[in-house]
Image 1 (cartoon, rainbow, N blue to C red):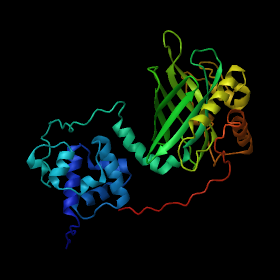
Image 2: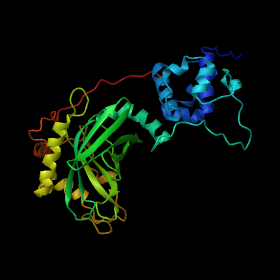
Image 3: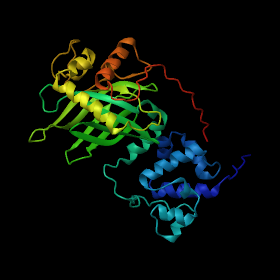
Length: 359
């Protein structure tokens, strides 16, 4: 004889069901984007179980991507308040009951939400989950090595700062003449960054770089896309290497503008004096000077500008070797010098694993 499952929280179940249907999020998608089994979502929606706090936080962050301003407090109000938050105006829909299913062939239109430039709701929802899991590896001060977009073949060094705010990563890229700011998303272990010049209307820059499996990124590589500084603003793509030169202060905040300006000035001087190639080292120079369409030393040919993992320089504490450590220290000494930036720690990184019970 089957036994009916007891109802633990039918009110929350109805509110979750209302929110998912109002925002056109199915059970399978919810389970996938917050990293739980679909059967657990079904138990929440049946009222048999209320999500544990960590899962409720993940659900709330996902809904906030589609309904800006949605917070944990919205679960506590009455059904009509939740409906208004979701953009549902009909009194019938505000009751804590499941709204009607769409008729066959009917298009379900999500409620309107505030316009957000460069909004990527699906990727950001996934990134919130992955930054929570992997984001500790990336905050720091870096030098980005690349060739000039104006196609002179010169090697450049840019200053990059990455910091974390909750479950989001942000960055600033600058030298004495320009700066870009933006968000970095972690999607399926890789990093995607879109930056806008924060001082003038001077175009955008975009990176895709390899993620690392350890708890601290020391060096990684990928591709940057932007435009040259010529009269036609010619678009281009360049292989890049991102290398840590200092850690963030204990506060987790960016170093002062005075410290960053001193480092950027050192980088500009290295470029003007033709020292960037020597500071970067042979391994980095080899990685970022592309030979698209021409045989490499190993005989392989790239017909697209790309950075495959078998040639990647991505390095965390897991892959750190004495040779790589020496290269990191050389770049730090060249660019940071007496700027007063926090130390670059190359020691082991240990963390106590967090155990999370599904529920």
